[in-house]
Image 1 (cartoon, one colour):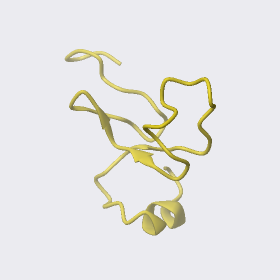
Image 2 (cartoon, helix red, strand yellow):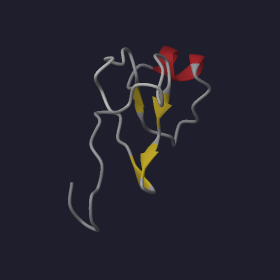
Image 3 (tube, one colour):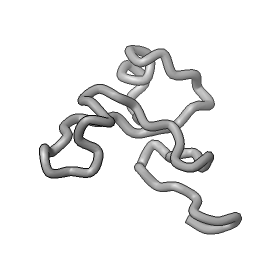
Image 4 (tube, helix red, strand yellow):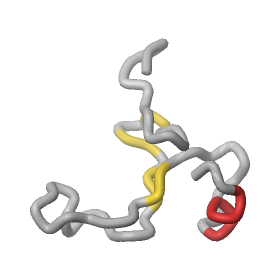
Length: 61
């Protein structure tokens, strides 16, 4: 979500970060839970970076 035009399309604020879902594979555990064009902003209360990274514990990526 580095691209400002894409961020604008999904009404993300400048402070929000996350990743855009493009495809869900049928055998994936996310099948039925996520859909293409969903934006994941956080996982278990940890913010998702625009590059897809999350801080899994305090002070580390």
